[in-house]
Amino acid sequence: MKIFVANFHSLTSEDELYGLFSQYGSVRAVRVWVDVVLGEKRGFGFVEMPHDDHAKRAIRKLHGQWWHRRQLKVAKAHRTS
Image (cartoon, rainbow, N blue to C red; front, side, top):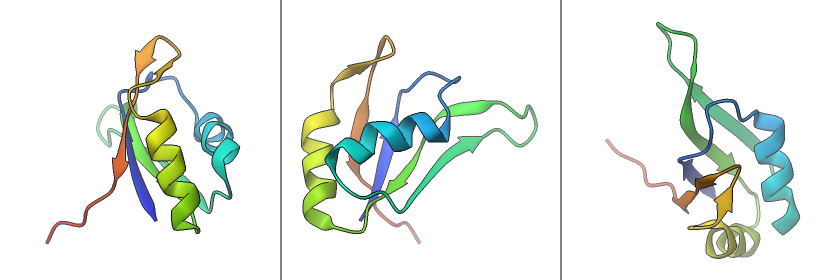
């Protein structure tokens, strides 16, 4: 399952997000979005977890939690056409 994560500090690394989400199960990939023009992280990204039950638990536990002085927004990612 692909998970959308937002409102984390712009200095957050992919490794830090990996560590946070791996507390709830296997993590396949982490991607933090970077502004192409400025080269700065945007404070949102995606985490991919291969097991839906682990992903759902991570969403339930992390959505709304404070992490590095920011309240995380965590939800199942939805595809757009």
